[in-house]
Length: 304
Image 1 (cartoon, rainbow, N blue to C red):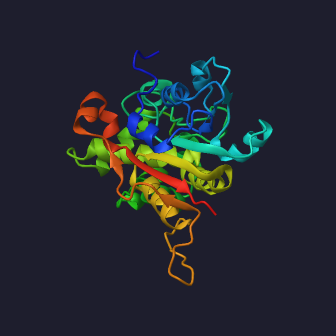
Image 2: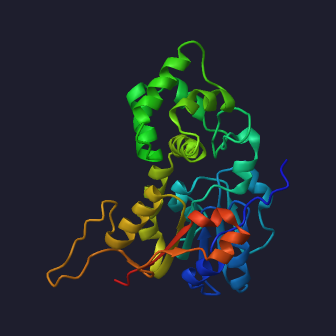
């Protein structure tokens, strides 16, 4: 096991400010992880408040908080509405989603999230899921692989990368990280190797865990789950996520197409609280380098 903290929350005080916590309210942390955000939310709640934490990763269960106001749900947040109904919760005052991968995942070699370690090409947040990075690499057709790397990794040489992978797997399945890295290396210059390798691993992780689809489902459900005036606070770590969140907050759809009434007022279920995205200060990045790519957006459900 690594001595690294499970996770250090980015933009913690700004996130709490964004939730605008009502001490007697009901809140959901859909990405419980190490429990950093959840503990901070609980510190703002009275004895009448309630917090529900979601996490599909079995490892996160070890961080569950022993507090009568807290409920831990071991599930993907795509099932948010169903589990809230199960716990007799109709609507909530705030939802927090920190979409970053925990330190724990990057630093545990057997999880396969990082190219820094040797290990199996896994990358599953839910270890009971049948789909791994290795199964994608070894079974996807060349065009489908190229699309994954282009859409989720924004790699312009995605077709060449996919072609190389398909040729390499013909002799034997690609199972290990180092083996995969060695196959990819000829496609990247030495100066950009780490950055481009990180993009490949990001793309595979997104595909393995269906992260973009699940995010869309969360955003859509949040509109019905939030009380009028309730807050949705989302931390993203790459441009694809941020674009989805920004568009949905502005327009209520993922394309960002504004629908207006007769008088020119935007018809959207959420209203952005911060028109400019919030990022970490230089001081915070010095303390927590992984906060560098964090982008915080806050929206409030319109009072209809």
